[in-house]
Length: 205
Image (cartoon, rainbow, N blue to C red; front, side):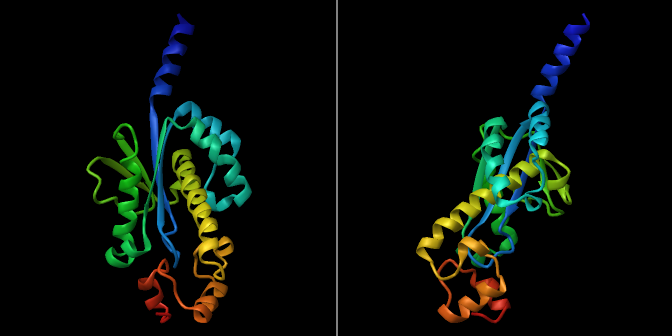
């Protein structure tokens, strides 16, 4: 009887899912903002924690790339969405980030009953239950997993775009406004993937 109870509890835990969502690239000056949503059972959250899943910013690029296939394999479902630099310029970064999150959520097979979002800002277009967790990527494995999926996906895109926009060191700065990146914009000018609204604030456009 005890074994049966434990089995029932285990099955209940496996059915309980945590759905975390996070974005990356919000503060960059080049390229899209990416969001990822990851659905994890209690069991697989524990396994990923053992593998070393935590806030993507605390991990090396190599470690994030090693963890990505494990996350995708152990997630019950996941989705990735993005919003382009032209959408960011037109709509503003908050609305564009929300758009990338909604696009990621639309790729899930089922609508989550509850969503855990990294950061203090509500996902305004979402009409389901949501919880905002400040520093959520270091508190919830589903958010940490989403941050890794989003980060690796965006970094991979930046590395591919390096071929098309060589000279801006995208493989190195990943589209962020490093001092070197800013000096290269002054030297070569802006591309169509630079965020003009961000550069206007820095008087670079």
